[in-house]
Picture 1 (tube, rainbow, N blue to C red):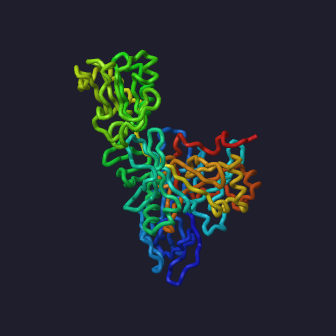
Picture 2: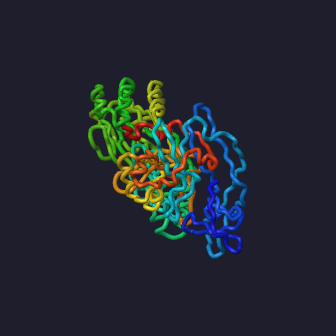
Picture 3: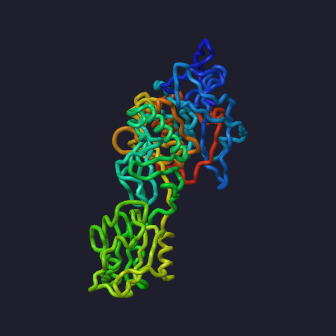
Length: 516
């Protein structure tokens, strides 16, 4: 457990300097953030300091950890009122295993503590040797006022217009971004919502980000759009209905993928899609397969042959449109080309909606039973759709104070990251570093250990960030060498060990560094 000795007040309270709130905490109580507590006059980091291990056995389990028994109630000085003060239970599980062992161990920033009030070196600067190369990992729980989440929702359903506000409990916490292939995108959080609006907006934004980044569900609404429940790694729930499939492609792409399976069994196929509706007989795939004109006429704006835009308004019906009857996008067939008995399949981009029609003597489509050969192809569309999921990427900027915890000359760390000499991770998960100035990172929250994120009621998120580089490079960039400790030195302070996911990309793998 990380401990800090702090001056004690006459009334038995101590003042926490781990963030700008500067809570006064009674003995046995936690501060407003539930992260620090007063334990007999010492300021104690409540959450366990965490390492990840690469285990040899495929069925290795996460190891429980030990926490001191502290009063759960969060208190601050009477003059400081924080409606954000919530408390969380403390585990009393014990663990007597060897956290260092013989398997590779990576020190995360989870439970490490912060650099606030900014002149401090990082809480842990740990030296390890990998493949005879001396490495250093600097770990800090950054206080991110400039942070947010990018959310990808795999669904054809229309969630709301671009730029529409995303709200939780009536407060705007972000907006709808441009849609991507088969997914709707949200941009949530950011400093303008955290600090630029009302206190309530900042509190709700911070709480929503905390839940999303810790893989908890969040209910939200979109202006002129849908009601959602979003949870990282889980299927979205749109207007009370859980999504199942991400579309296989747009209507035109679906035509190209399955044209050869349809051509022998049907005269026409229409793949209904909010973006690009496909028509087999007109599509280049159909022409090359010898499909004959059917006289079909589609409402909407014709693009290239067999591709139509704006056949209907966006919605939660067929292919992300607002229609429930697929025939509503058709005009009358051209009598010079259409013939009675013409066979037509209409299907959505996920294969979840389909209908089969034959033209009667008046060239009007009449619904009929789907032939078995076509049922196979419809099922195959669904088979080729990936499961619908919500993806949450934490996004934050590593500012000057955080970088000062790594080196006395913060810009040298930025340059080292740019030159790929320093590897950046968040809770052990590989972080994508944006090009351009500063150190702006994104990381998949599902790759991090459970409850990797915290908060302070300023409001801001507390997120783990690690910088790993060769010891020689660290010394050259002006690192705090006098604070470097070995993994053995910190062994008694590590309270939580978790098995690293198999897909985790470790900073000690050679492709991240030029060893030569």
